[in-house]
Image (tube, rainbow, N blue to C red; front, side, top):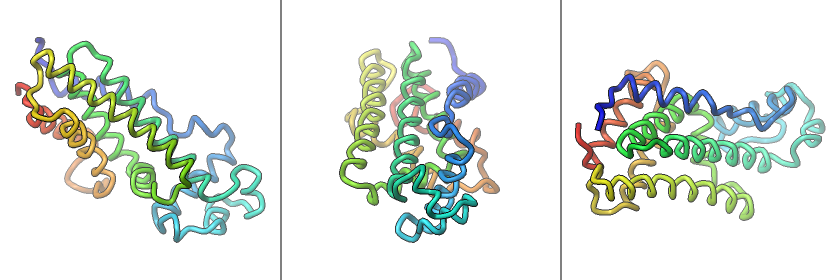
Length: 215
């Protein structure tokens, strides 16, 4: 197996992240303004503390104008949650596609961690406000989460079969790997001791040790 450096991991992770556009789903400037205002308000006040008036003020529109694009604040939360979880799924799919499972895991953890640091406001909302979704919308988001988890479990299973990983419980290891990155959105601050790049590299190393990968 060729030695994989931190520079290799960063470069591969950055290529994956460069192809993920959070705002691609909303084509017009007005839609992006509404979604952006909702995101900021959900992050600051929580879903239940946010009103349509808050979102309207943040977007520079009237409350009535919001209904042209979104039927409710729950629909806005769903749009953000669906998009955020789709990005997480696409990110792990791209990383797991690499031939060597150890390299794939390092890149996956790096990119997943870095995204949750750089997009911490979005990640915090989509990861921690899911309970406010309707049953139908919650099921869609839960399906995306399961897709993401299946990809990670599949990669760990492949690594175990090829002798790259040593883990007693694939499902538990998968949950632990994803939890590392998800929790970053809760505490990361831009002026703290870690940059997103450095944190991604650290977590990639920690995940490797957890999975029994060679240093």
